[in-house]
Length: 480
Image (tube, rainbow, N blue to C red):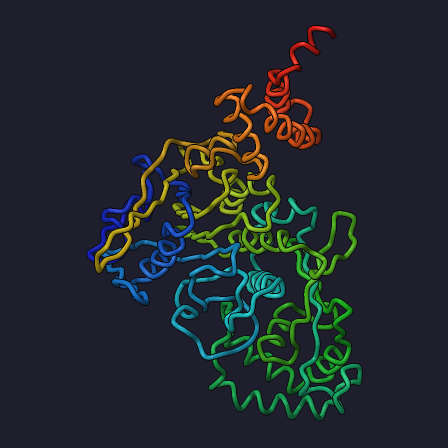
């Protein structure tokens, strides 16, 4: 199985060998390697390196630092899937599912797919996630029924049915006098189809590849140029960004105005219509526009549904800061849900970088490993050295314990409150009599702070204890 255990380097900022994972001998399921560490410890750099190495490169050039050169190779992976919860990830652009035809990059042509917030032109937003999911569902329309259980890990968490409705708009070139609501003339559509037929041999790469695409597109153009012209003209004339043109679900495809989803797929691949947006069905069959979903919901859908649809046996899945925008409960369930999305896939390796203790504590001993990344600054041409050390299994730990032991955060309370509490305790240690006036002022503020704390918070008792030792307080309590 192509699980990466360690990496050896001859150059670059990482210590060699660099620990990645330690699955037991004979392990054949999915293995998850979680990397934690402070900002600047090299987690995102490592993920970028793994993309390149798994795609056959052995060298990565960085501005202002020595190149990262791999000794040996990373082989055996059928596909690389990059997931990101941050727009500032280091994953390469390209390999982004969508609809616009373009000149391909090497990442577009490689077994690589990027499921993140950045579009190929660098624009960031929820609209990119919407386009990605729309393209993935359409690309894998024939497999939705087979992957229904895995897709449930994404859709069920949001209370959504596994049904996506596509809202389309006509391109400006097909609008009559610039009016979108004006019917398309058959003569205008015929002219457009003639142009497409002539350009078919030179049509650039489509980011929406599917088996037999070239043959299906050619057959569609011939059909649309002949007997299918009236039907296609009517279907395109009825397009409205407010209405669903067609919908996809594992158990039923509803092409509406056209006969098959393949025809709609060809319409989009040829630019005869453009995606306006997608809608989802709730459990009570109400349609919900994609624009009504939050960034966290889109992050969840794109990541989990994307893995359910794109993963193959022997996939390498790289994840950068998935916790962004996710509710704490969703963070806690993220790794488990990724595993559910991979059900039926063999020998996959997830490598995940996170600052979330809720994610780091979700790995069982037989499911994965946790490593702490750190950096050691040094004055040499090589610069800082980044290294990874496997840490004690954190499965089931509380978030506070993970923060304290591995992130060095001794308290998760607000810094202002912690500073006041530490100051008060320090004054008690120095001597109550000499600091009574300052302590009284601090206790008044601390009492106001803890008044809003949960009833059983131990800091309530700590503040009460400080108040009890103030001069005059003990006499008052005795009289009571």
